[in-house]
Length: 56
Image 1 (cartoon, one colour):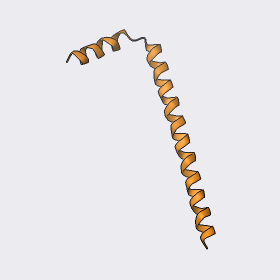
Image 2 (tube, rainbow, N blue to C red; image 1 turned 30 degrees about the vertical axis):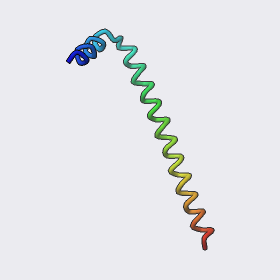
Image 3 (cartoon, one colour; image 1 turned 120 degrees about the horizontal axis):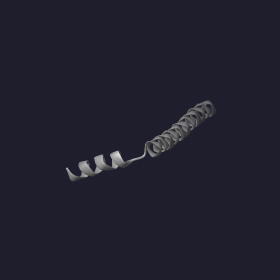
Image 4 (cartoon, rainbow, N blue to C red; image 1 turned 135 degrees about the vertical axis):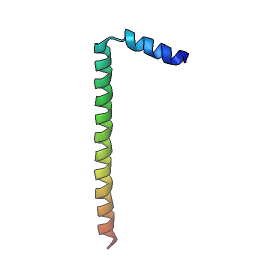
């Protein structure tokens, strides 16, 4: 319960600009991670197709 109260107090003290910056930073990090995952997926698919074509 004390943790919840402390969290609520911090939320009330937080500056909206700080929260927006934190949100933007998290969003940027997530987009970057998503992009990297998509590149890796494309690479793995191409590698798999290449390996399958050389097996013949």
